Length: 165
Ligand code: FES
Ligand code: FES
Image (cartoon, rainbow, N blue to C red; front, side, top):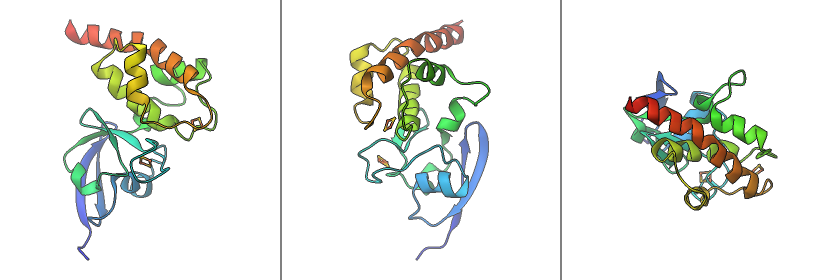
């Protein structure tokens, strides 16, 4: 077995180092080494989307990515999208639209939607449904989730507009 080695990356804007064996997934490194337990593990085989995090701007299933592959990457987890005292726009919209029940899928849907709206703040309902179709929610139903993502678009449009000025 290969020995553990340091892996350096950025998580939610802060530098992080984990010492993990090569077989350790990014999901396990985030949860077990960095205690970022907002990233959930459901199927652990790339199907449910609960483990989705953003790596260098792309929504990634952290159960399918090895931690060592994240060397030098910029990672955003659900903890980076807002705080309890200051929710991000997607989180605010999810609360307003009651788009959460058990919450197990929520971190993965929020990160997936954040990656989408950062790139495509004007994404329409069809595009949103297409992108979140890989995130399985067993209890809320998708109507409030889609409504929340649609509403959050205005904040992402504002960010894009400010960046262009
Ligand atoms: S836990 Fe990664 S896709 Fe289900
Ligand atoms: S809120 Fe329960 S699985 Fe989506």
